[in-house]
Length: 181
Image 1 (spheres, one colour):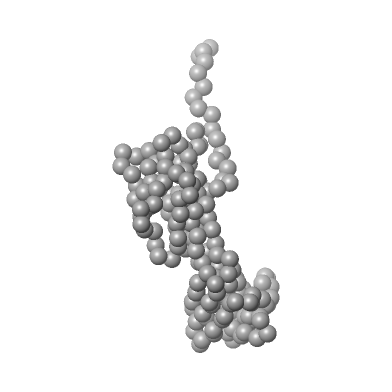
Image 2: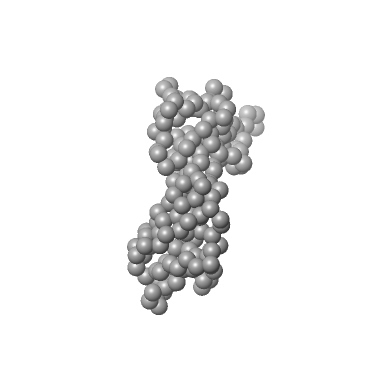
C-alpha cells in the first residue's frame, strides 16, 4: 500500500489555503484553484503544512487520501510555478499561428485547422514551428496539448506532424527497391 497520503504538504510563502466543508481553495502568485473534497477525507492546515486524513477507515477512503494529497500538491505547484507543455510542428510548410484565442495550424491539409483555446490555459507561438501551452492546472495543460497533437500525430516515415518537445519518434524504413531475385 502506498503511503503518499500520510506525508504532509509544505505550503510555500505567498500561498493561502482555505478549507471549507466540501472544497479547498488555493491562491498563489499565478492564480487560484478550487478542488472538491470527498466526504471520506478531511484536510487540516497548520504550521505551514497541509495534512490529509481519513474520516472513516476503509480501503476506498485510504485510496482517496493519497489521491487528494496528490491533487492538493499539484494545485500548490500550479499556483506557484505553473505547468508548461511544449509542442513542435515538423514538416515542410507546416506552421502554427495565434489569432486571439484561436490557434491556426497549417499542417498539410487543404485548409488550415483551427483550435479554440480554453480560458484555463494560455498558448504562445514563439516561432512558426513551436507551441507553448501553460497554466495552473496540470490536467488542463496536458489535455489541451494532447488535443492539439491529435490534429496531426507525427508519422513514422518522415516524422511530419505535431509532437511534444523531446519526444522521440520511432522511425520506419521506406520501401526497399531491388531485384526480385
